[in-house]
Image (cartoon, rainbow, N blue to C red; front, side, top):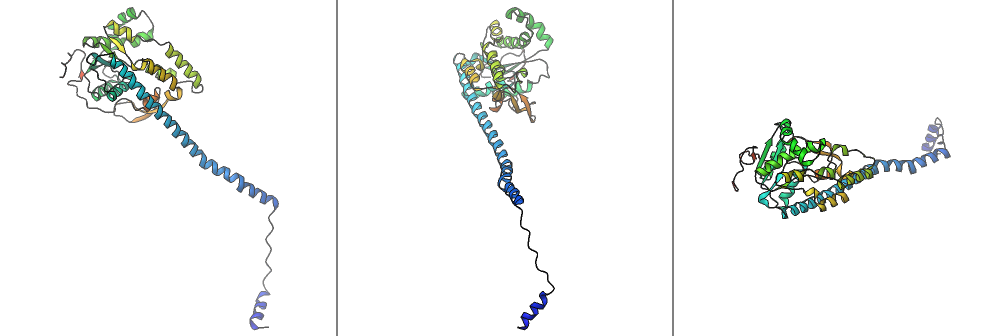
Length: 325
């Protein structure tokens, strides 16, 4: 025996034999296999697939909104062109509230080259919420802007008797809405206009009234109620226009536009939260609203526009400037 071999034998005397590792139990191996092969893939799928599914749904909804908004744009443009064909531009004005409906009309008019001889706005007091929007919209379209400012008491005293007599109604909601319309039509007639473009019909078609914002769990019922309301709607505007020697027109009540809106929009397209400007130039805030499709088309009130009161914002008693002034 060599010296090296003898040394190894001596050194190994104090060592214990290694303890063999216990064999894994069958139950433990089964549980481990289930976790690796079944539970882990399910967890990973939930972590990765759910966000992708939500993103896909969000993109699909955004795509549908763009499609509907694009169709709205082309249909509204066509309706406005139809009105332009039967009215004279030098005799045509817009009753400009400063809200979504009439500002959308101005945007459409700019796109298709329809012009107005002027805009008429009725304000009930200096702090009227849409005053700045109406002024900005008129400036955006380079329109002569005729503003009638009256107190609610003046409106009642001046226009309520004629509205009750001419409309043959005592309905409170009808009369309340008719007072401002009557004031606007009277001013338009004084200025020599013969045709007045208004925003009638948009609230009814697209859920503009807050009382139509319910029924989130019954979209079919919501649509049925909307369609029934629009099938039986009446507006006082044509009668009040006739009273003052004018014809009123709304692109939203043009038959082709109504047909498109009823066929292609439901609650999902009309009711929702949208970032809107509550004040001119203010921050856009998410706000519950109707008429979501017009908002998606970004036909909201103009954010800012140059405001030159010398020619475009004329008081109620100011004479109409000569053509070309």
